[in-house]
Image 1: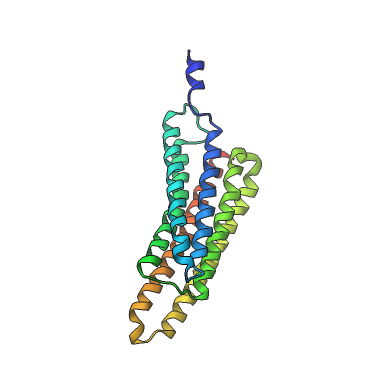
Image 2: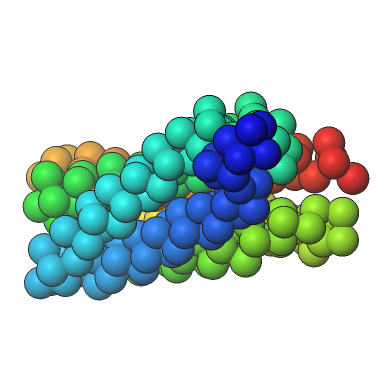
Length: 214
């Protein structure tokens, strides 16, 4: 009877498949956000796709949370599973905030540094997507997981530098008549930086899981 009941419950390995699907949503959201930063008509063209990617990621997050509640045996601590999917979801939630700010502030032209930060977000998204499937074999893949997490950390540091340079240049170009533009673009700069910070948080969550299981 117990064996029959357990067959109805989510399998342990489904968590890794769900992590991978969520990471795909993150990659898609990053690509669409980067496309928005090309400016012009691309803003309105790609904005709905960012929102759609975030909604798809939210659906996977809910699926993971439900699976944690219904699964007897999980691949690692339930709190770690929920913490990881939450940190992953934070990345695309923050992308949505950037996209909404761009539209609300009616920005259609972007400094090179803003596009470079978009590039950094795409790199982090790709690194995260490469990392999460490796959790299915933590012991064997610990070194590679750590290496990829460190690469996310490096990109995060580079994005911080790009942010600082971009804000400084924006301030230098802005006169009294450009105050509103400065405020709007500074907000977009700051929100983009937070996206990369959220990837660093996700990498930290992954490293914590590795430490506990190796």
